[in-house]
Length: 307
Picture 1 (spheres, rainbow, N blue to C red):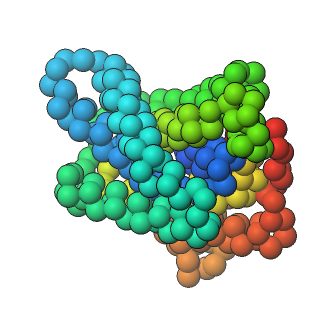
Picture 2: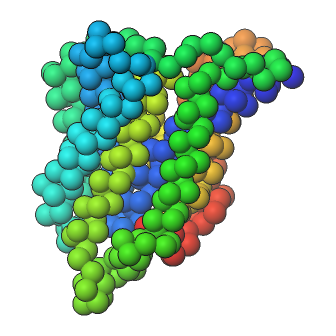
Picture 3: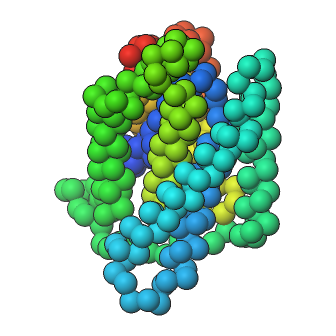
C-alpha cells in the first residue's frame, strides 16, 4: 500500500504538469480551433531560459527560492514574446486557409524551435541546479518533495485564476465572444486579434511555468524535452474535453495517475516482459479509447468555457 500511495503522489505531480500544458492547448483551441503543436517547445524554451539564468547567477549568493522565482519571471517574458511572435508571423496569415495549413505550420514551427534550441544550447542534457530544499516530507510512508508541493499548489492556483479570468473579467468575456463568432464580436467592439494574441501569451505563461517546474522536478533540461510532455498534454486535453478548462486539468491528472500507477505495476502485471520504461504507452492507449468511446472527452465541451 505504501508503494501504491507513493505512485498516487507521483501521478498527481506528473498530471499537474501535464495539466498546466494542456490548459495552454485548450485555450488556444477554444479561440481559433488550432492545435498549437509548438506548445511543447515553448515549455522547452522556458526550461532552458530558466537554466541559463540560474547558471549565470548561481554564484550571486541569492537564496534558491528567489533565484527560481526570478528565473521563472524571465522564462515567462521570453516565452510570452516567443508565442506572440509565432502567432503573429506563422498563424495569423493562415486564419482563412484550409485547416491543414496551420496544422502543418505548427508542426514545422515545433521542429524549427527544437533545431534553434539545439544550436543555441547544444544537444547535450544539462543538469538543473537544486534550488529548493531537498529534504522529503514524510506522509506516514509515502514522501513528497517541496518542489512537488509547489507544482500541486501552482496548478490549483492557476486553474482558479483562469476560471476567474474567463468567467468574470472583461478579457474573459471578449475571449468567449471571439470563440463564439469573431466577426460578430468585432462588430460589438471586441478586437479579435488582440484577444487571440492575449490567449497565446497566457498559454506561453503556462508553458513556461510547466517547463521550469519540469526542470526543477526532474533535474535536467535539453532541446528535445518538450516534445513528449507536449504530446501527452495534448492527449490530456482531448481526454478531458479540449476547449474546456476544467477538463484539461481533469484529463492531465487522470493521465498522470494512469501513467504513474501503470509504471509501478506494469512489470508485475506482465511477468517482467514490460518494465516501467513502457509507461508512455498508457497515454496513447487512453487517447485511442477516448476517441473511440467518447470523442468529445470526459467533460465534453461547454461553449462558455471554450476560451
